[in-house]
Length: 313
Ligand code: FAQ
Image (cartoon, rainbow, N blue to C red; front, side):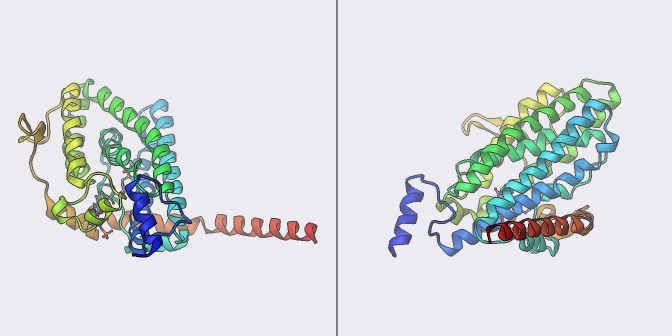
């Protein structure tokens, strides 16, 4: 073992953060770039399902909140792209990987938002699941990712609460509104559980990621936390639990629940969900439309640099 390798492992063991200029194994770097960039893509693509409802939010208050939530997701994407860039990959490379299907983004964003209640369900369940995962990632071993997660979690927790509050208003509203809330819960509950990834036994990256403390808890453990916390929330809403097999297990100290439809999961992450094509086409169109902005910023920065150089000469 080289001295650098020894020092890297010592730091991991001692819970010291690995920083961009530190030596790290090539596989650690590669795995982090993969996970952080896919996380960034998820935040950015995740703007689309909710963005679909900004013009149709039921009140000015709901519209203002949704608008700022969607903007927050863009901000999260930017923190995460910046964290990935510290590992030596460029933003344009990451965008290319997303647009060509080389890099994934969270399966959840390939489901359509059919009603206003879906927007409430996303805030409550999707942001809720994201937080369970991200709270654990605050302790990830890579410094820039860990610090990004701390900021992101603060905002996600507001997102989750506004989603739950919107869901509560529907669930306690007219019979039609309650039915809409139940329908959104029935459709989003299972895909939200899929956000945690495949079972640990099927998870290609978990073992190494846990060893290097990139991930701090396994896919199944985090999913179980989410299942457990959601039962009471559904009760308070007065809605029916979508899982007929949900049952408290005294011996385990957790709820037992049905297994997920893993064929659906693999099909969605391999590009065959309801909205995969639409999401990428929309991203490509928005990216092309924004080209003049990127060109203008580059030209402006170039001009500023030239002026500074002239003054210094
Ligand atoms: N969807 O070996 P594992 C949010 C892929 S943020 C798509 O277990 P790993 C905020 C996985 O990439 C939501 N692909 O992988 C928001 C790998 O493929 P690869 C995003 C999935 O990395 C709210 C393969 O399967 N959060 O929602 C999924 O150890 C509202 C094998 O899997 C994060 O990204 C999936 N669900 O564990 C925004 C958190 N699951 O790369 C807008 C950070 C697995 O070999 C609106 N990421 N895959 O081609 C993580 O914690 C991990 O990457 C996991 C997957 C847990 C997602």
